[in-house]
Length: 429
Ligand code: GDP
Image 1 (tube, protein in one colour):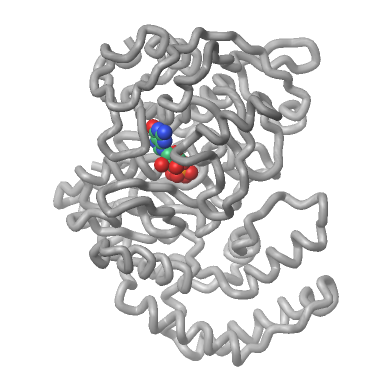
Image 2 (cartoon, rainbow, N blue to C red):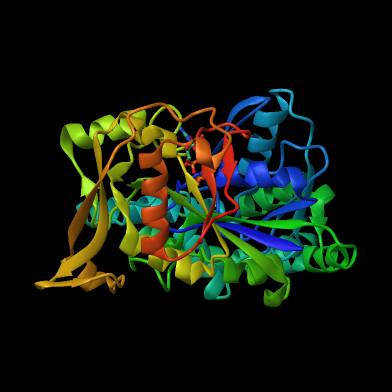
């Protein structure tokens, strides 16, 4: 049985918590896209952790954690991350790395930094982790697969070619020092040493696991609106954030993905540039930012303050549809308990017309939010275990949003911990 946990929006919806929670019933958790550029925050019996590359199943003894072929793998960062959790008494995870995963190279990170510098104010708000140059090279067919670390001849030949190519940019476009082939080879040898014990033919491993009836969780990074095809291009990430891509980025048949849990946060937040229709500013935003998530809405990787907004039904309906949602996990609802009334964006006004269909980017830039205000519940809902015990206005908020987005909210998260979850059997009724 394969399940996916993915985001409906701009990321930071709370996928880490939901994955960590669902991983209790899983044998394998696999990352299938993205790199160390975004993070998941997880709180469990070992403490509070920010994960960037490791799947959110690493905290259980019974799960195998896999880095799939679709991931942008930064090898030194992966091992630093493992150390950062084992230093805090988490047992060494059972880890497998796909032999077909490609590696983020030091020059990808440099290129990312130099390009952001060159673009100045017109930048894409990159986290400068080398992700965009990495995926560009992958699709330009000049990337390095983990498997290639074990072919010395090929490494020599490829590194010579890559230095020649990249140094044109370093010297003539960015006016920076060139990279040396020798240094690159030494780096790759060190990567080989680190990763060797974990390298695996992951698609074959998963094929067997499925035959053995194992439960596999695909863990997405970011959300629909950051997808390079279906998101707010060009303010997107460089790999597909959709559950469908889980099949490709893990190496399994698409029809094996039986459950798609799309995570939606009870309000909106975004990082980086790009249109954000229900964005709020000033004190209103500050208050939500400070109260939001667990300890405030600040980037798990960068510490950047997140942009804040009200729940956006247009974006979330679209976000859930593109994911192929079977279940919505509605998160961070507890945070809204301070509000007298809660605005919800139910439509976009574009050139004088109201629509509930999420538009292409140039039209999105012109969209103005149409709000409906719902009454708040004015109390703390943490600790509540049964749906029926939630305040009436709180249930009304959930059910209103469920109706607007058209997908069943089967889980409601009312706190950051593993146990802060309300299962809802009457969802969608
Ligand atoms: P991800 O990238 O989608 O995994 O999301 P993040 O880790 O960036 O963001 C979620 C933040 O909200 C983290 O700080 C979580 O600990 C926290 N969080 C998750 N679910 C809940 C919830 O139901 N209530 C509260 N208060 N915080 C939550």
